[in-house]
Image (cartoon, helix red, strand yellow):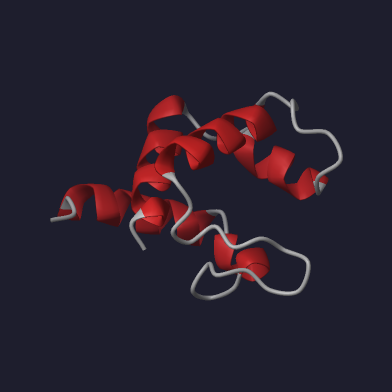
Length: 85
């Protein structure tokens, strides 16, 4: 079963960073923006870390701006939560 404390932390981060404004209300993506809901946890962690360090050229720079503010534990919480949606 999902950890309720982790889910609450991650939901707060999703809201704070307005993930749904680009990825859709259910994070299933839309138009040219990718689905993040249900992606593998390790992939989500690696992608967020790469955005944070500007190591993902060619993608929307908005993700770099969002990810630069994330701490390691926040990346872990987001990845664990979004992977289980």
